[in-house]
Picture (tube, rainbow, N blue to C red):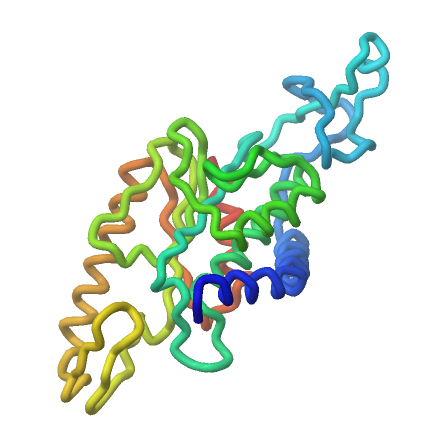
Length: 266
């Protein structure tokens, strides 16, 4: 598929992807306990200006009446006021080993948007790292999805917490220097299990590679994959990120819950 056709297909699938992300976020939100929310007598730590996409019910009308600006109360929370998100858009992310499985990009995009939905609904601001401005409120989610489908990718800003999604199959993954974020490695089950036997031609990511007896490659392949996963964990921990792992044949709600809990523990 050409890049133009791929972009059109992504754009056409945005409404379905957004709906799935919102449903997934609501499933996980129902099972998350203990988040600190606004309440009677709870202290807040700052005011900020009302922005497009913010909910009117969050305006502090008494404080706003003393000036000519609409002000919102930023309440104490267990996740940061701003969270950057990033999806590594490498060619290998378009892989799915069989029909019925999402590509790694599709699953990562679902998790990214569902996490963004959770954070936005909790009053946080979210930005696609290096691509969009910080967005607030649920109105920001479609804009984030459009930027993602347009192929916008960039490295995380150096002093902002970031959540990065990708397969990280490159030799030396490098993540941001700001601590407190997370790294979600997304792999296809065939990449994890190497279920191939007999003669197999591997193609799609460069020159085709033929294996006369693919099962003879399994041990070496799994050892190399284990080393690469260990490198991802080490790189994440060096930069103060929480390393997480997800297979595309596993329930996305489990991955999203683990990711959200990791952010809340900071």
